[in-house]
Amino acid sequence: MESLIVVDELTRVARQRGLSIFKRPEKKILLNNVSLEVTANGWFIILGKNGSGKSTLLKCLSGILNPTSGTVKVFGLNPWKNRIQVTRRMGILFGQKSMLFPDLRVVDSLRLYQKVYGVCEEQFTEMVNFADQFLSTNRLLEKHVRRMSFGERMRCELLSVILHKPQLLILDEPFVGLDPIAQQGLFEFLNTYQQSYKATIVMTTHQFLQSLEGAEQVLVLDSGHIRYNGVMTDLFMGYANRKEIKVQFSASLPSVMTMPGVTTIKAEGNRYVFDVNTSITSTKKFLDQLSSQHDVLDLEVAAISVERMVEELYANPYDSVGQARHTS
Image (cartoon, rainbow, N blue to C red):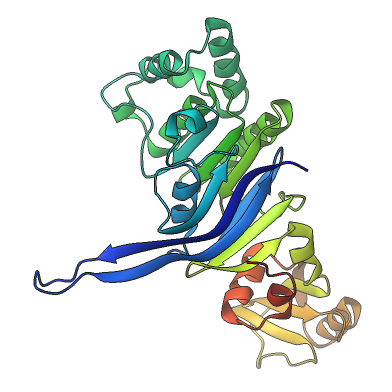
């Protein structure tokens, strides 16, 4: 399949000036020897803690930052040297930097972008109505950007980045600041846009990861290094024998429960969360022993969340799942 983005041994170093003007600036490596390829018409999810290099990588892909060393190709072009050609084919959204003009109405900002990208009136109307189906943006068009809530602004920002039907969307934590209903609408919006317009989405996020299980690629960054680079399903496969069981008892347990392959993750009052390795102790055996010894009011059995998987990849640098499929 065609590679839309090719990154080869990308390193980005920033200079940090000390408190004293006489102290020489220190160098901080934000990305260290990162190599990857992103195929067309799919999802590429980037995961990582704060400071892991996620936003820096997105800025290098969008041409905002120039690599200290290594190469970045988007649509076969250097995005730093060919900003105009590349950005005409991509939509970029960084939550901390608004694409809308604060002293104008939303519709005025959209009309400016219509002119910049040369979008015809028919396409303008099409994309405005498309976004409204999922994000309810039409009722916000007459509002001044400065008077909007963060969630309202984010929804209109997303509309502004798809006006020109970009082939590539680069989104930095687009779900942050949205209520659960708006988050669900945004997920449906992005999923439908990706399928309808054959787009590629490169996104950092920690929401809806379970829904993105079929994502073609997922990258886990840790302090500028690649910890994992592969398919989401492969990441899940390494945790197939792990279950997260939430239990509510009639009273708190007198002691922490101990069974082979069972770890107590959380204990708050009469509510407990257990991590059960079913290759050691089956779910049935665990629940049978639990209910025979204690009064269980409610329970929920689920797969290990992606957030937990990522946390464990960070916690153990020699994790077999991370190493087995790590590429750099």
